Length: 119
Length: 119
DNA sequence: CTTGAACCTGACATCGGTGTCAGCTTCTAC
DNA sequence: GTAGAAGCTGACACCGATGTCAGGTTCAAG
Image (cartoon, rainbow over all chains, first blue to last red; front, side):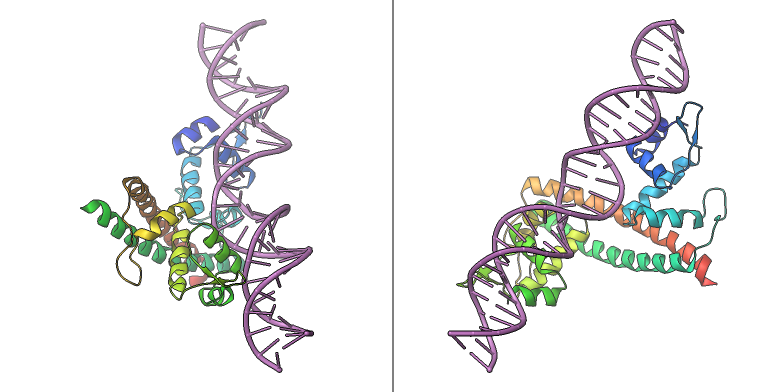
């Protein structure tokens, strides 16, 4: 599919999709004229990329991580190197802390919301 | 206490503390010579501010929110306006989604980590 | 062939918390 | 009073994903 359709179907801007491709997160064939042609699987992949961005990972890390992830077709196409493994473990710790933090913040917001609007 | 001690005790840089004060998140008296003098309660407040930043709130929102929060002394000193209330409710929704997302990402990382290092 | 929608590249801007540096002042302990 | 640590202000830089614009090309339908 073309970039416009992919953008529509994922809710991600064309700008971002081009950026993802330039960062090596997303592969696209090209038509004779140079237009990007994305495979169907790109939809899932873009969603995943967004999730990883939302979790605070940067594109370099995502690029290394993606091939190690299980995709819709089945098994991963690569295995994490020790270096990547260490990085991911660190990310995991960070995410854990963040989750804890978010729960606390959510509770705090709830308190304030309830005090004001819960009536 | 002075800014250096507050920085040490909270693990937040002096630069950031000055920024917090400039944004109205943190109150400080001044010595005759112009040095900031923070109350003991500033330690807790800084920790809270960091949590809110980590949760993705921006300083403007935090500034409005802080007075509505219950602090160590007891009740809040202000109540959320309808405007703030709407904003906070939105933040809450966002945070909820983020938490969900983070769980999924964490599981993904676990899978990759286990596949590589779990052995 | 023509036309309008869709796409291309490249460049520059933005946001906001934080790092850092310069140049100067204040504080504190001797 | 003096020295050195600590503090002050103001300015500039950075990061990194995304927005946006310009100027040109390609695609598809008539």
